[in-house]
Structures are given as C-alpha cells and as structure tokens.
Length: 77
Image (cartoon, rainbow, N blue to C red; front, side, top):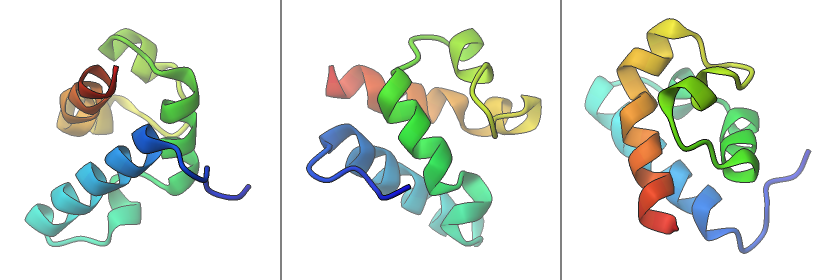
C-alpha cells in the first residue's frame, strides 16, 4: 500500500518514529513499520487501549512508544 500523500498526521508520525529510532540507535522500521503508521493515521486512536487494538502494536511497543504517538495524534487534531 502506498504512503498517504499530503497526510500531515502520517508525516508527523514518521518524524516521531525517526526521532525515537535515532535515540534508540535502531532503524525506524524497528519502532513501527509504515503500515502501522498508516493504520494509526487512518484510525486516529485516542487512548492506549485503542492503540493496542491495531495490528503490529504489542504490549512492549505500546509501553515503549504508545504515549509518544498518541501525543502526535493529539497535537495534529
């Protein structure tokens, strides 16, 4: 699936992912794949519980990165 064009939320999520990956010293896809970011941008979960329902977001990643990505969603509203 192609990346959304001109979707400011998707781009903001990618920036946050890049920054988190740089801090952790890992490639961005280790944080979340683009498909997960597309789902987040499309669904716009408002809580950790809603975020946890998306494919590719397990308990460990939810604990490690959930709040950071929820903040991006809140800031884009």
